[in-house]
Length: 335
Image (cartoon, rainbow, N blue to C red; front, top):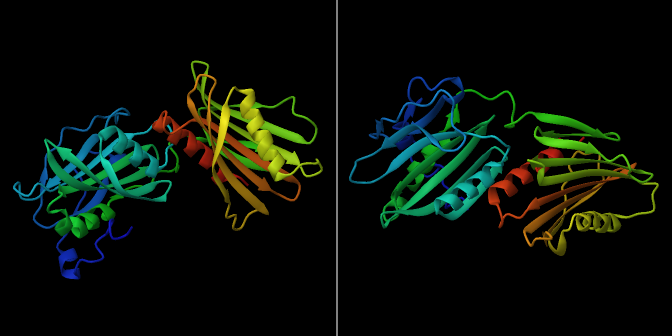
C-alpha cells in the first residue's frame, strides 16, 4: 500500500529542503494552531474568519494553499469539532461516503491518525487526492492535497510529503473526545466515553457479574455494550459463552445471526491468557441490519465477555463507527 500513499521518501533532499513551513493564519487560537510543510512556490490563499466556537456539523477551513492556477493543485487544512469518539480511519471512510469520493487506499495507523487516497470529480474533471485525519482531543484536523488525476503521479511524492508533515502545535490533555468514565466489574477496570449510561445487572446468576452500557437518545437505545465476568468455577466454556452472548441478543429481538469474523486476539503483556474476537451480522425485529461484536477473554479467575450490539455499518455508518470506537476504548483500557 505504501506505493499508493507515499510520504516523500522518494524526493531528493534538495527538493525537501525547498518546502516551506507554514503555521496557518493568525488568530486560530491554541487548540487550532498547526504547522505544515508547503511545496516551494505555492501561495497561501485567504480563508473566511474561523468562528470562535468551531462548528460540529461542518468542516471549517483553516488554510488553503495552491500552486500555479493552471495546474489545479491544492492543499487544504480544515477542522471540525467532534461530539463523540470515532476512529480516524472510520471518520475518513464516513467522509468519503457522504462526499461521493472513491477510496483507493486507506491505512489507519492508530485510533487518532489515518491516511488515504481517493478520486473524485468536480464538474466532470477527475481529481486524485491524499487525505489525512488527525484527532487531537475533540478536534479533528483534515488535510487534503489533490491534483488532476492526469498529473497526480508527478505530484504524489510532494503532496504526500506535505500531508505527512502536518502536526497540531499543541497536544490535547485527553486523547479522547468526551471524558472517559471509569468502570469496574469484579477486579476488572475499564473506561467508556461519557454519554454511555451504566446499568449494573442486579439479578445476575451466581458467579456472574455484569454492567450494561447504553448509548441512547430520547429513551431510544442506539448502542449497547455488555461487560460480563463469569467465574471459572462455573461449568462453562468459551464456546458456550459465545452462544450465551447471542442468546442475550435474541432476548432483544435480534435474529438471523451470520458469523463474519472469528479470530484470535494478540494479548501481549496482559492479565489474560487467551482471547477470541467474533463478529456476527443480524437483524432487528423490524429488519434493521445489526452487527454483534463479541470479545471473549480468559483470565485465571474469570472469563470476561464484552459484547456490542450496534446498527450495522450498512445501515448508519457514522453511528456504527462511533459505537465501534466506544467498544474499542473499553477493550483498550481493560485492566
